[in-house]
Length: 272
Image (cartoon, rainbow, N blue to C red):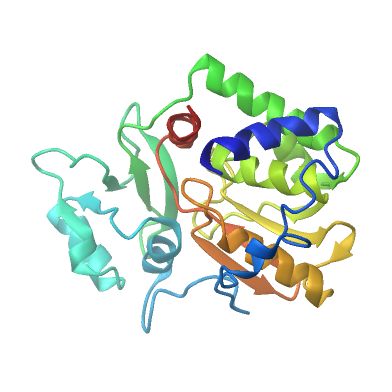
């Protein structure tokens, strides 16, 4: 499935519906084996009792292994805001590989703002940045653009308003985009929104979260059978296409990936 998912997604260029009849498990006996993805009626993790917005964002947005480097003063501020101390690292000797950086005020040159939060009192903002962000190659960017255009052109895709604009800009994490293309190639998908996490508003991040409200023309979660098939199929995916979080809400199924610096390269490495 690792190499085939992206190839399947590219197949939506020719219309796609029904190209993989068992992709969502309707007729494939293997689809009954994996347990459904973990579900929740809550919109996002809250970071625990007493956690502030930065702690809640970190809990929902970053892989468990990802740390945040900061100066001593900013580390104290983050700890006071509920961020676990074991997720924080000193920034004095440079930012460890794979870690993000928390700063107050202006983002360092060449960094990517991942999230921003108002600080009480002086009107300044605390920024979480990727100090060495990965960028797609020209080939990877063209592949993402082609896949997004194909997804929009497929008659089984519904993505109106802001969701359609995100796809037209190809501003979707390649892991999520490949996943959506595979669903579309099989059954068609209704995309209600690409919601960002609180703190990520106004950033230039690729969309990593999608609210799916229909599969194969059936509403989710309104149609229990369609919802169960989607959850089972999502649970059967393998990295890098396996979602980090799947939540069933009243408005649809929210599928989320945690932040990585270079998702295009991650998919390229998995599909060679």
